[in-house]
Image: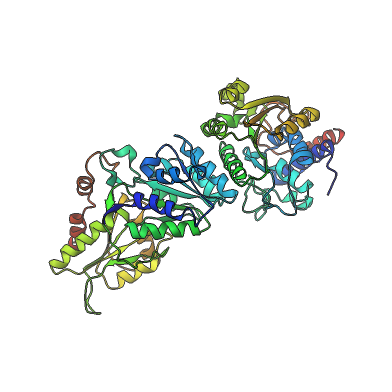
Amino acid sequence: MTTLDPKTLAQELRGDILRMTHAAKSGHPGGSLSIADVLAVLYARFLSHRPAEPDWPDRDRLVLSKGHAAPALYSAMARTGYFPVEQLLTLRKLGSPLQGHPDRLRLPGIEASTGSLGQGLSMAIGMALAARMDRRDSHVWCLLGDGELQEGQVWEAAMSAPKFKLGNLTAIVDLNGYQIDGSVSEVMDIEPIADKFRAFRWEVCSINGHDLAQIEEALRNAKKRRELPLAILARTVKGKGVSFMEGGCEWHGKAPNSSELAQALEEVSRG
Amino acid sequence: MAKATRAAFGEALVRLANTVPELVVLDADLAKSTMTADFMKKHPDRHFEIGIAEQNMIGIAAGLALSGKIPVAASFACFLVGRLETIRVAVAYTGANVKLAGTHAGIGIGDDGASQMGLEDVAALRALPGMTVLQPADELETNGAVEWMLRHRGPVYIRLTRQKLPEVHKPGYRFQMGVADAVYEPAKKPETHLQATVFASGGTVGEAVAAAEDLGKRGFLVRVMNAGTLHPFDADAAVRAAADSQRIVTVEDHNVTGGLGSAVCEALAERGTPVPVVRLGVREFGESGESAELYARHGISAGHIAEACLRNLG
């Protein structure tokens, strides 16, 4: 297993995301790079799990509701020992457990099959309810996209989590500002997003999703005992770490070619 | 005694609560109608009221299942199947051990009218890999189906009626998943061919038995098969029936496309079984009226079944 220093892990995630989507000639680098720092801190410091025993009943659950960011999740899993790092390059290939979007039945360690946006938070609520019934310390993390918040089911779920007083549930929203057809504010504005979660009776915490210290503090607070679910609103940059991918929606669902990959890896390795 | 299968279902959940400790029940503001209200009262810590938010209910049920619970999520059939995308990904594709209970099946619900009638649920849900689709016809079968569904690991859809249904099974009957059973068998010599074998399910089984009894009095030999499992369908039963019947009649309180009639035709065609099939089913959206009136108006009553058994097919 490689180091679990969040900064190094984030760098590894970025390199993997670029290599994987390049090898697959498709995939979603933009929204994977934007959550790399959050996932790195989560996997390096806070996710309670046993990669060698993926069905350990007391583990934390991570539901990647924005399933198109699968490359980031696969990389975090490989780098923490779920499967060999070399396997990452099988992304999207026939027969690979690394499907285009996460598939629980093909890859041990995936908690829920996602990719149809808007469904993950409901599933995370079910897991949090079960953990409480069974008196387990498991924390449930749900990672959502900002465009995804346009799905109505997210708000059905948001309404229900405080009713059940799910203090063991944390939703992290990756506010990278862009979706396939344009900026989130142009396509269908979701702001004021903190007010919306507060109105639904969530605790809310807003951070810079690329500031490792802020992420660390937010995740540490998330694991403290509390009465209500917590929404961490992480402001991020789509394509973060690669100059020509940053901002905009051009790199939402496009893979780098070989020369783009070389430049991107060079930039990412400089950190 | 006649009983609605939703009522038998609700009683079965209460009865099985102690033997299946992982059982939890979810409702979307219809517990009184889905008949899970008694479970809710007796086991408040194992019941989750999600409010009028079916897709959230289904997703929460999936999460509970993925953490080892055996959730039964109940609503009207039409409201469940309306959230097909959530059922498809969060339940079926994820492989979550969720039991979906769709009550108020078909036009048999009567006066609430078309928007409350589940008429396309079987067609949609039997297209999902790994999904089992059950439709019991009376109390005895409902008991067995609910017990089986809670033991089975994998997603199940159970389709239940609002209206009371007559007993069509004898005491001692045991539910077998995937097996269609004869609920009416006319006495005949081995070499004699039947006029027809009728395949019915749920609300139409009693109608089919009434038709067969009536035809029997008039000298026609008709068998009634109860398809308590709609998916996977008992193809062997259809082929066996075709071997000694001049025709097959199917009758369902569901749209005529994609349900029981389709399953029977698929089975017969794929086995190369040359036999005429008459499909009776609903072809419109339904409407308000009494249950019996609607069965008559939409062509799935005992009278229509008898006519379909004798109709000149030329």
